[in-house]
Image (cartoon, rainbow, N blue to C red; front, side, top):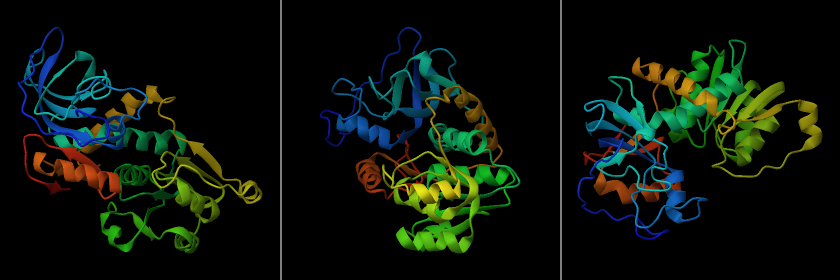
Length: 317
C-alpha cells in the first residue's frame, strides 16, 4: 500500500531477514477482511507508516528461526495494523504474533477460524447459552460467522436451527441441517412469522434484519445475541412492543470477553480438525486479488476471503 484509499500494488521484494526473536514464515493463507480494507482506507484509528504490506492474519510454516518446520498462525503484535502484515509469500514475524495450528488442518480454514469462529462460539455458548430446549434462528447464515454459529447451535443440541438468507439462490450455501428462512424487509418479517418464533436468535448482520427479529422472530422471554452490523448500524426500537415481548437484546463484545478467545479457538480448532466444523472460504491468488477486494467491498464474497500467495488457483469451498 503506497497511498491510503488506493488499491494495493503487487511488487517483488527481497525475502525478509529475521532478527532477534522473529521467525521467517512461508505464508500459505492470509485473510482479506473488512478490517484490512478499513486500515487501507486510512480511516482506522491506527495507521501503519507508508508504504506498508497489508493483512492482519495468516497461516504458514516456519522456514527460519525457532521451530523451523512448524505450522503456525500469525495474528496480533501490530501485523498489518501498525506495521507490515501478511499479504506476502514470506513474512518476518515477531514471536508475539505466533501461535500453533492443529496438525492436518487446511491452511485456508485455519486462518479463517480465529476471527469468525471465536465470536460465533462465544455468542452461542456464553451469551445466548443455547441448549437442547431451544429453537434457534441465525441471520447471515450463509456467511462465515453465521454459518459457524448455525453449526455450533446444532452441536449444542438445539431442537431446530433456522438460517436467514436474503434470496433463494443462497439457500444452497447454508450448512447441512439448517432450515432456510428467505426474505428481506417486510418479506423477512412475514417469513419469520410463518416459521414461528424461536427462543434464541444469533444476529450477525444488524440493521433492518435485527428489527425483523425483534418484531417477529423471537418468542416472548427469548433472547437475541447481537454481534454484527453489516446490514446497518442503527435500528428503530418500538419500546411498548419490545417491553411487551420481553425479548433480551444481548451484545456480543469480544473486547470484554477476550479472556474467552483462547478457549473458544481451541474448541473450534478441535472440531475443524475432526471435520465437524467448517467455514465457507473463497480462495484467491495474486491474479484475482484486486478484483476480490472490490467484490469484498460490494458484499459479493461468500464466507471468508483468503489469499493463497503461493497458489494462483481460485477455488471456492
